Image (cartoon, rainbow over all chains, first blue to last red; front, side, top):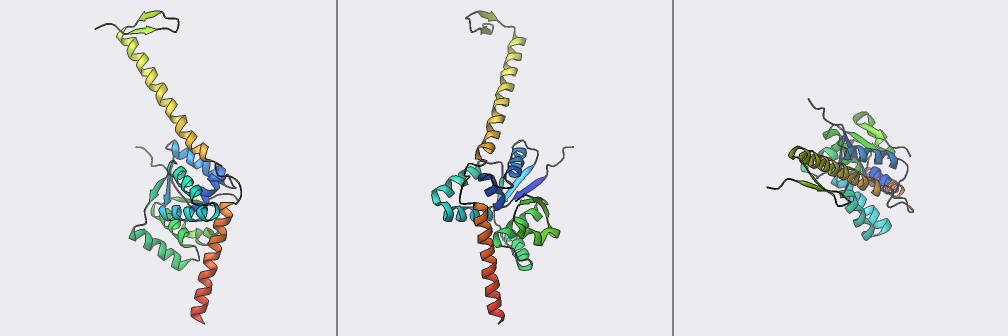
Length: 138
Length: 81
């Protein structure tokens, strides 16, 4: 019987660290290469994609943001839409913990997929007993 | 039907048995598959650090999240006063 590969959810921080080869970026590169080889599965919420778009758009302009989004979609990541069920799962987390709205979606997706959440954002420490974290060094 | 033939770079023609021809086709198919894999992997590697430099996006993200939480805290405090 074939074993199901482990799943990792990438948050906005993880993807940014990869694109800018910042602290933790090498770990993300390693995950992406494992994903390419089919050894693990990678997932990301489209809400986090939106967060990436507006922050890059604001900091570096829309053209750069669109180029980054194109590159993001060439990576071996499955993107998950914000269905009502996912929005509510994120909302319940947000109502309980002092985390940002986009972070709540990443956390809820990790719970749904029984996945490890790859992040370098210390905000997730507040919720660590409810999540499996794959910590990216900073 | 004519037998399959292999033409060497020197222009020499070698007639192949059907079995040898099949084996050569298999080698070529496998080689093609091996070529595809590293090319895909390089997409991942090519995007690593592609947007490196200032400003730091992760720092902008953390700042944004901090500001979002501070805004919410302020709103909650106002409501509770």
